Length: 100
Image (cartoon, rainbow, N blue to C red):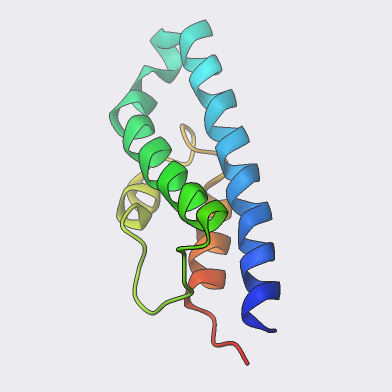
């Protein structure tokens, strides 16, 4: 996979993740009693994924080694509160991928 192909794949997964985060925020607003625990990590994930999206859009993002800053938060989140955790795994995998 070339750098541009990987970045386009990453862009799609990042957008899907942002959409899911927006849906999660709406769920929290609808049922804060049950979903309120997600507030602990939601803002940090929104900021981290949002910044990644901005970097991709502006052309300043580069595929890299190492873990993205928001991955620890996503990994440690309760899957019942973050049912789309696998999207973060996909983001990290593409980010760390060796390209041609």
